[in-house]
Image (spheres, rainbow, N blue to C red):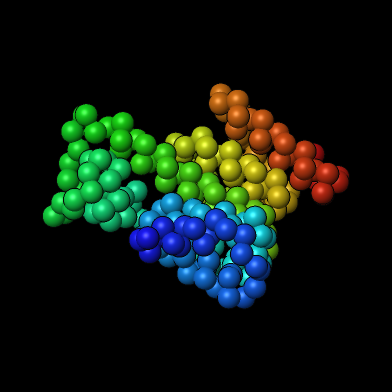
Length: 194
């Protein structure tokens, strides 16, 4: 079994909660493989591991700093559909490769979304701000849905302007989750953000 497959398996399995497990999952967040990072983020979020907040915040920030294709292997696998490496890892793609490139772009937004959801479940200092700062125009709608879910869990009245902006989106799923998040925040913070 390849090391990344072992890491993904560890991240997905409900092993006993403890400092060693949290430390190992936080280490897995540094994996070169986006699927492994996503599995670790989901596991930490499901467990609501407060001790992983800093590692998740760091991983979340780095996902926005990195290019969509982090390394040659990932580029070759998602864009070219082959497992061999190219010399520069940024070889121009042909029009035939566009669907694969879009799929890779979409998958990375799903990773970012799952990290946002994990952070929302954990909450705490810096989480709401990091999620709000990550919202930009032109992102994948799945990411917006995950942001709404995260803010539903950890948001305060500071999140309401961004969520109200999502209500104006034509994409119905984002609208629905934004509405749910607004209702939840208003229930937690009665009399604020009306």
